[in-house]
Length: 443
Ligand code: URA
Image (cartoon, rainbow, N blue to C red; front, side, top):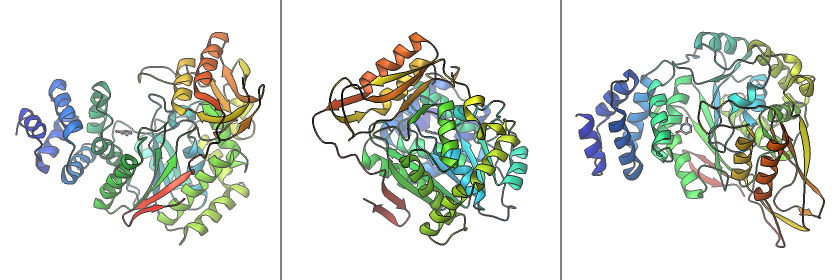
């Protein structure tokens, strides 16, 4: 079939055969397709969707378009985690060394921030010298030695996805459950995993605000993992408010280090330990999630997880002293200004999208992949939906480069933090757990 035939088939609601998806992804990686035709196909997929067979074939084709990180020789389980993206989400930075310190390998392949959400790679690169672009051979050696590497998607992994993602971004077709699922899983299945944990965000600040959509996304990715024999567990987590207090880049690394020292905000610690528990079970280190949770908590309390993070930072070119004195080593804002409550009442909302867009307006995020991120700017948001506050209480600290930047931050907070008269009942941190066995409501 020609690409025109594929567009016509999908436009009319037909099913494209697997062999055609494989030919399509090979041609995508080779750069031989016309952008306007691929774009038309993407829009047809956006409206018509893909069958389960088509989603699998697209994922398999994108996976086969590149190389894999072959870790099957490691004597331990290999488990990664993926978050669908949120604000203040620095879980990966602490989670990977915790799980590695507990004896399960974590080939953590992360992304950059785009839109209102932050990216783990941008955050890690605020550590002086830290490299996230690592050839697969070097990442493999590091995984053999430390059981963990914190890297970006290299050009070698799923190149067809890279081409397709850029076109999806340019044609407003990112928000398609089969396209998102095939894209994410084509990269995860290149890591020779024995398990994968998904943090699927729901709520106002997520890409899937609707609960049913979030569940469908999780189920689609779980089914794709099962096709490759990789068990996938998804936790549905609340993104109605930022996670933890720090929102930005360098300040999020500092908060993750705090967590590794046994401190830090309770929601961040709880989500990190719950994800670690799932990973330790999937990696074969523990028989139950309760045992995994205990092992992960002990790795934090004993300092083993912090020591592992220190070794990872050093291996990837960063200054390990960042663990001892984050303030001296991480980029700091020129200004720290309080943001105060202007009325008495109950905090109704701390709107993550407005916070994320505020960080971008201050220079700490991206609107295009070419933008350069200022790692020092952002917020420390100490208030939560449901808090009772009084006029003059400090709700957040604005961390800014200069007064103009601080004004942008203040305007964002003024729109994001809403105080009102009514009591608020925030959604639970983790609402559902989804596996091939079904959807379990946790709270
Ligand atoms: N992350 C990806 O890698 N792909 C998507 O489609 C969305 C998020």
